[in-house]
Image (tube, rainbow, N blue to C red; front, side):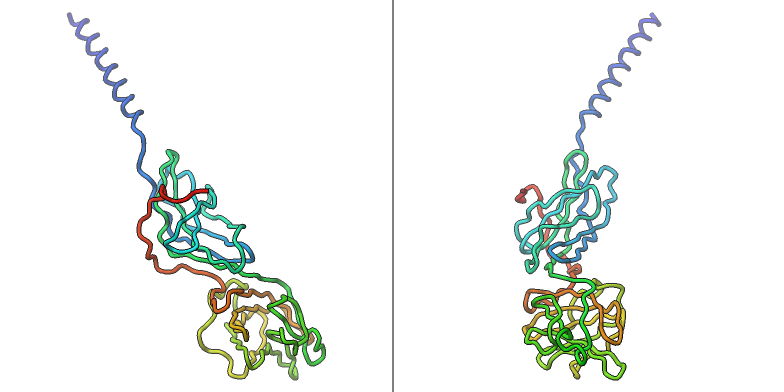
Length: 270
């Protein structure tokens, strides 16, 4: 009798274990990750570099990157990555793009779009350009953001020029333009926006290696120039120029979020 009871209990235990195990195995995770945070972008020359904070969920498999032409517009899938950074190589200079990122897990659950209001307007940039002291080399004393080349300092396209005045070096602009020394910087990307005030009243600024200067051109464009080297005869610099008139964005940063929760399943994916 005891053996029968023992076998009955054993068989019942095996059945319950199998049933519970099968039930647990059949449960599917339908909970999406949380939206990524800390999205930042850096506009470059026909490109935008994005980065964000890693999600805390352990089952996150990767991230989807989206763009739109307005903050509340229709977001299109750019691509996916297992990393917390992505480069949009298809961005065009002069066009403004809004970006958002989602996280997805191994079961295909996708989060809502990230909430930051992030946009970027790519613009041309250049490195190790040089112009010469206009007093001794007038034909290569100026720089034009129209052609991105050295030009005669008094050419109509000249946006600024270099001057060695008795051993003191200056970056000069004409009377219809403005310039401001933004101080020492690490690289050309350090200044995010053109200032709204503080322009030089003398239309020049003392040239210092390691300083970045913002220039407001005669036709309402903004540029920045960072001096990397200088001699008595020439100045070497990196530059970036915003091709959209009136756009003060030289490098983007996050704006306060205003977008509500959006279901990425309704977005247009390509």
